[in-house]
Length: 222
Length: 252
Image 1 (cartoon, each protein chain N blue to C red):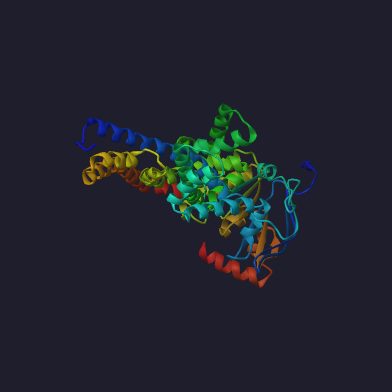
Image 2 (image 1 turned 90 degrees about the horizontal axis):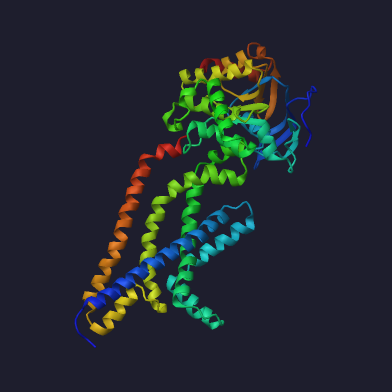
């Protein structure tokens, strides 16, 4: 093969970039749903539920994402479940993201002052109503900046899915490089594309945080 | 669940209530009762157990022993219906605890709609009515942060009133306010008393307690040390209350 970088290569990289975004969205949605359940489980009145969710979080946070991806791809195959690289990567990232978002959100829920729970309790609201109508609306405001910030981590971490053969941006770069042998140029392009995806999110997160800072009195005092 | 009847049964009664936080005995055999329409003021030093006793009435604290009956609910029992209890009991806190993400109107209509299933339009009418009661009609659409401390506390009282409680608990509701704002909140509470609301309040405002309370409970080291009509504040019989009233008068 050999030759020069041409439009086909760039199209291929572009498709990889789209899959990076796609995988990030899958991880965010899946991890968000499971993570929300984890956050609620971590503050459950039932000790067993709290314990189980804490063990889950510690296990995932104490395991490299790379290992989780391998376990998802090769481990499931070993027990007879043939999964595609998209399924394996999506599921692994979901489990991984859930543990982190669950912890971030638990912290945000718990940072709503206890007096807000008491006031809601004093008004005879049920636990679900207290959570849905009083605590979560306040927790979501607190959670937005760190959640957007964590999305940057998700996007970057999807690059690890390349090791299970999922053709996202990183993997497509490797494939193009295998034919062109211009690693510096190609990985520089890839770095720029990752940066272009992550930097706006970082900026957005910082902007949200500043806005939060201004509105803090709105949350803390009353 | 026993219904409250117009019998002379008290609205709130505590009998030999015990409560410890770890090794610290906070309530050591507390007994008192509040009749319908009565205003009871609990006074005492910090740490004497008065706030804990108040919070036990609404079961924000679980008691270790003794009996608490509030509007027919056996609050000391583990199977007490908390939501039913808290519909009968309104509580107002020192730190107002309005919901900062909701307007004053939404703060007030939330519980009537969510708990009692009241229609939104009806709840809005109710919000206007209770806000008028505390003199804040014009703040209907404001957010809590846009209100002064005194206004926030009055809004919190209105929010409690909207649930039409049979008894109101006030936990040092003016302690975070300067004298001027304290006065506007106290005027609202005085009006409630005049309207016949049954109230239990923990307060450091001796002058106010003397003026409004039908009965004073002086708490000292987890016990009801002295109790009687408001006149005990001017002619206390125990040396502890004498000393407390002495220092209290200096403060106010």
